[in-house]
Length: 403
Image (cartoon, rainbow, N blue to C red):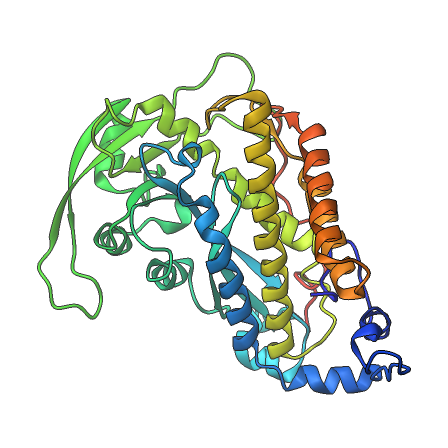
């Protein structure tokens, strides 16, 4: 956890100095382990144990969000699912586990790449699931792994990387609702989407026949779904945006319970998971690994997720205080008050550093946490709608180098 502290790219030696008070008995000079001894001890820690620690923290924190009505939409908990690549060190263990992608003409990228498929609660910003896969796997496979862990009665918000009739059947039979952006290109769109676009439809019910899933002996499933399209606003598109057709498929078929405009606005909130991936790689510096083996790479991944889970709990406390000050806020309010995420990460790191240094009593820590939560509420600000960012790689190292 100390290695992966936010904005603190630390070496083993620096971590040992911070942990020195934990070694030795009171009144006796501590015997601080060397950096190499710490590295050897870390080599004996399996990544599955680190994953278990993250899941234990998640299980302890998740009940805080269970009864929060403001984070539910249409009576469901919106969960976004998306994938990102993690560029890992070029070592024998990482190359064996995740493989180097091909670039064509017999060339390979220099670094192996792991596919990380995240499930993320949209409004609480709580990571609720992760599948770590190799380069040859797919986002579909990652989502299938997550369906068994994220539970039922969720509204899965997905982009065009998850279009597939067998996958849609899996999502429906898992007890979840779906809001999925469809491919509209004539060459590879579904027939119902193609005809919907040709008719310039806005909102329509469509009957789909979903085939049997691979490896399952079952009859085709007939499902009623709903297609909706976005109307383009007048004037020039925003920066980094275009007038691309957007068609959404949803299993919420009752228009009076799930209005078209609300569904389109909810899909726009899916961008929060892209921000989550950015925070993981830039604020917690995930790809700047302190070790080179596959097991230790996964250790640092789960340490970063543990940080983000604790930060979500701190944000939950701040959101409750914001509601007491500003009143209830709707999820689609363009001027709703939000905490500053960068400040949130900083104070959570400070809490942990105080605990690790043994420089604070439990009562003093609770008092400091209360002051920090009050500061989060004090400096919370309104959303600034209409802001956008170009989708380009911020850390190109390791992605284009060939060997």
